[in-house]
Image 1 (cartoon, rainbow, N blue to C red):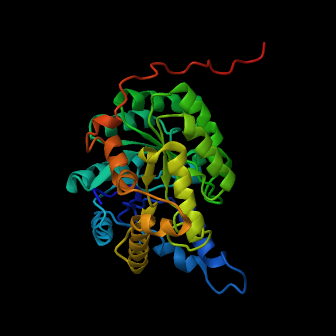
Image 2: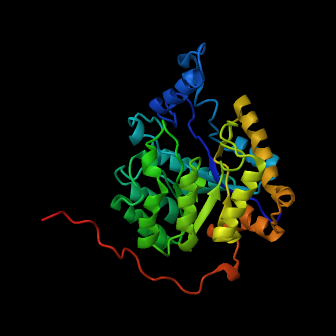
Image 3: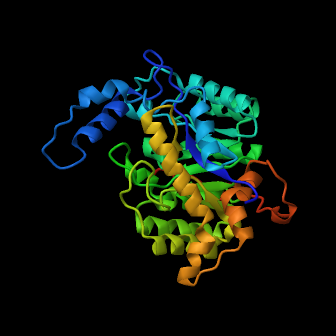
Length: 357
């Protein structure tokens, strides 16, 4: 394998009471799911789980993340921030500026291993300025948007962010998964990405999750990416389900066929390996790390597994999907044969909606 890069790793950077990364309401939601997520009788008390919710997932110095990558033989990963503050009551002890500064420090501490994307809620005052500082001054490699915070990707609120990323020549990663009750799932409907790729056809856009777990959203992502030539499909949970839960896993044959469908629709040069994982120096983190190894090994074994179903993957295609495509986007490697000599050269063709006279 030429290079393995994970496009989707979360790092919770809170340092304990008084410096929590996840807001209280988000932690309470996780605690409630832990206590009542299965059928009765319910014997768990969410109040017992709540105080240690962030402690079990936090990795403020990045050591558990690096150890997890090493264990699975992964060369590097993109750190994805989350900003649940405005969508969960704003009671977030670690400011979003501090979160980005911590990502800056981790990227500097592990050069060539950890790469940071910016990702404040766009409704925060000065959020675009924070993105400009992170990418322009600190060397962040892209922008992550989570529409589930409460706005569509087609909202003109985001157009300044798209414009800046186009100018800076960095990719924008956008969630397209359905994940209530933590979020407002309707905003993640990938259909709204048609506005983005129409108004910014030269912008590199990564479809995080590729519609998981809704099969019709998967088809929408494929349909958009087929003709939007600067889009990329990041397949995480479609491979072995959501990390941390075996639920909603596809069978081996359907998984292989899904990867093949993505490859056949957009080309292996526009498919990305990602995991949406989170490491921590805890027993929970140890469990995650082992599942991560299984996921990476599954990806590496796809060519051999696919033969059983009459499907062929070349090693060149696997190298692209598991690392080289992302390396190109992050400007880690230069692959001139994949560099377009021409651009569309326009943006925002359609004017914004106007009030009825």
